[in-house]
Length: 322
Image (cartoon, rainbow, N blue to C red; front, side):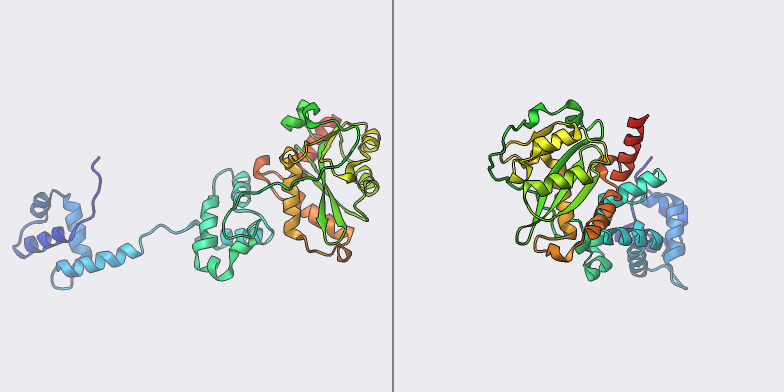
């Protein structure tokens, strides 16, 4: 099959001379090495009321080419509205595209198309849609883990002793925990299940070990607990008490190896989108934190095949009971 090529200005000039001399369409087509249908359509579309003129034909051809580009997927108002609503909720383009694919069984829109819409479209520029991206930045940047401070926490068991199921994320109940710091001696305890990424947020009355122990034992106890992983911060000094309460081992990351608890570090970053570091926690209630956790746990994740943390936790908790 021959590759189709558009007629050039010289081709149109040859057509003009052929028409003027009274040559047939087939004769002109043979001279140019073109299909007679191509020449016939060219003359019919671009001739003036009196005669075919090459300059007029070129001008009309260029005008048509301006409008023959394929329409963007986001020209569909219903799809565009859905994307805008999810962006406002803090969903990333990958989550939006993946959730649509999971729902309809096919790709409705690629995440790069959404990025182009955000950065390049008139609406995206005018509305500054980049501000709705998860990190709120114009450019994607590498994330750096937060270093942990040295602390004399006794009887630590390091992460290399953690169960294979926890490392492979093959079952629910293996938790990571951390403290997200705010203002002057204010903090929120975060706990996330490694498999499902289900997150629990608890406002702490203080940064000490007693407050952290109470938060974990009271707030996480209704859920499956098979292990807990944390850093060596002073808030985890009562790890043996927590381990005894849950009947589950407590593991520690190595100093300055925050990536060893990457799940909770990622969830901390998500929490920061809702409440930046300068937030005054005196103005935030536990109910407010529960609302944030609800939204996080009901947002699909690419690493979960675009299911939500709640869906994965629920499905695997039911499987454990059975």
